[in-house]
Length: 404
Image: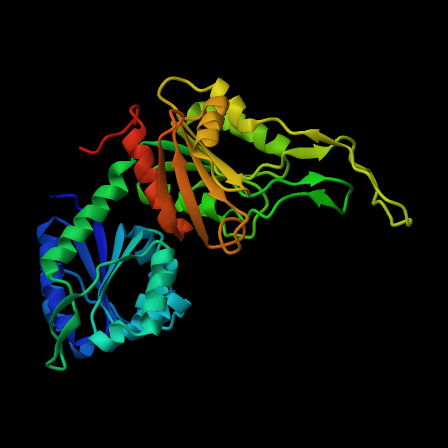
């Protein structure tokens, strides 16, 4: 495998740091350009000169070695993958909390490519609730963990916590790099967030959507090498770097943006929660309290998803979302999928606290127009996004780009 990717190999203060030499050697054998970034504690265990000989690059450690102190930005921009092996308990905690006081932790905040962690520590440390909570935080964000092996530990005990073998780490890198190229050339259109319909200049009709599911799908598609366009309603989430973003507010604006963009894309995922109704006649000025009741006259907004299905060309794939509050009836959802003309429908019950709207997690069921269904499970929206794209890939017979 001679893919020639730029890989940053992060090494932290674990006694297993010396094994990073074998990891670097295998990655270089695979044709990658490996740049080692070590913490100051790692250099107490890692042979710096050997690392420089193996990779052909100086081992970097000091954040401020280069003029201007912005070396981390250049490294992050140029890399295809960040692999931290070994990852100590201390480093995992600092990374999860977003602390950045050295070159490697700063890189973790600046990086936009995929990240892999390979923990190494004593078993009681690895299994400690704090370490497991930090790992969950990171994997929820899309970081990939290579769990440690069982074996001899630094204490002399046998247990879970030994750094995964260099060969297993190399295989995980190969797999992640394969996935990162799988959607290369695929044009993906994603809608996310709520829409707002003005009642007057102060008030609006909206919903509780945070946009996190749609934004997680954007991240997942970008990590696979897709070209992504995002049409987003008003949300409080940072714009995903690498995507073309169109900000809208009303259902009408979202409809116009999607109709304009859809013909130039291969896949459209409608994850936005579009308001079903709008004010028939929005007020020009603020309605003030007068002690009387107020009746709003509402009109239905257009069904954007059904409209897109009518203009769908051969080879395009269309995915919709359905938020339900009275349980999921897969037969009813299959009829809905047929009625809207989608290739696949993703449904969830948003009435349960902590799931769906406004939360970091979701519980999704995939439903096909022919009535087949698959429960994708309850998980973080970022991990569910990966599963959604994997299921789309299986069912999309017209997938436009196959890995070589």
